[in-house]
Image (cartoon, rainbow, N blue to C red; front, side):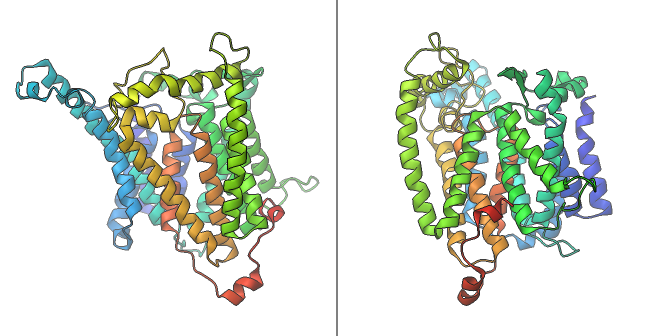
Length: 479
């Protein structure tokens, strides 16, 4: 049964042989990524574990390297993305003897230290390969493919977003069952692969309803993905007015575009995850500022808003979490206290190994807090300040590049896409303060980073730019 996980690879090879890399992206890779749980893995001795998306990405990237590698433009972001993959392998390889300084024992092949070191180096190699599959290769796909024009003249990015929002709408519709029943229909459907599950995900109930997780492992991760889908769906509705505009039933005002938007919004709400909700709210605030101000002023206004909002949230949060886990009166307060105590309890652990961290499989658990629900803290613990610095460089570099693009005179579609990208970045940066970045979120994030790097929007003359208008209406963005 485990070999079932390799089926996407065979299907991708077939589509590549009969069609093109673009068809493989749209008809194989994206459906596999968004419809199949990635926590089921095939483990072959001496080889890294492979999930459904990993199996599909390998033939796709190989085809890209053969046919389109000559068009690759090197950038410093390429190095950052590769260094993040290196960081994940290096932190695991250095997680014991080398970090502890007992390097003299390593010369003895019979010593226990040498055996442990060999095991850690092997694990580090597997972690590095896994990072290539989930970080580097999706980044390459985003950079090479999403800004291409297909043979029919339609931009690949439009086709990709169409496919993504339709798939996510399908996930939301199916997950209504999970919302009502408080179970996971996805885990039931793939129960035959349970022996090959790398992590145990238990369905959660909040406010009397199930927190839908779809095939994404956890409700907060699902919320982050629905957040991305919702923002890009709003962009697609604005730049492609004909998409899905036909009524599904003549007598009713129901269109495909309207139903998909409603499904994505419902999916985000059904996750019952406050982190993605807050991220979506901040993203919409940023969009509102871009309607009122120029690029630079919008960025400054949003920064000022964050200072005021963050200051208020800090004092309110400090008062709200001024309790212990045992004395907290509600689930929301317990979760907030838990996240506050994470920072206090894990600071000594970070200080003990500040450079490369403890590794993802060997970091010590403090006060039973096994789940580090903060991506930045998790990186400091597992990969040290090296991994955190690389990750922050990726976030900062992506944000600066988008702000530079937004400040230039661009065609309306490109400008709206830059604003959508910045909104997604704001939403994700906010949400990962409350959860780790895992499962399909990692793949989609680096697909997004590559897409930003691959953008080469054509400028417009200043007089034409004034004629087009520099401030697209907020209501039109959401139309």
